[in-house]
Length: 153
Image (cartoon, rainbow, N blue to C red):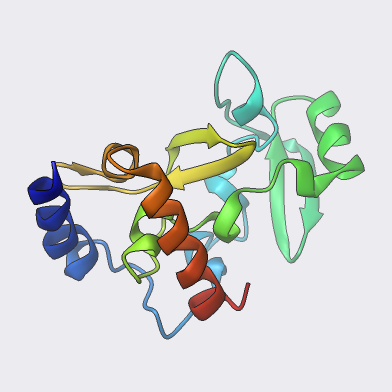
């Protein structure tokens, strides 16, 4: 398994995934239209049914981005406690961050781990979530370290 992770490092973190550079932690690059998470309902990630597309009619602003919701109830839950729903690592791909780079995730490629919403990139044949799951404790440690360095958190 370690060999596979090394291949991931060379391919995934080495350039294919580089739609945001380490020099810029401006997450707005992942939301060029100002709509966070590709328009998916951030509250729905935690529901048993899975992630749902949001609608512009049920939206809320937070930290300069517009979040869309599948229902008024989800919008209200978010507005009441946004930190309960926002993705870890400001929404950057968790696996790529662990490798020391910033990359926009595929907003439907996610998991809830230890209460945190983690998002992952899909790059070619490489799935960041699969790589993360090969050694989640190590990847979380490295992502946390790199988040402090690259994101200031």
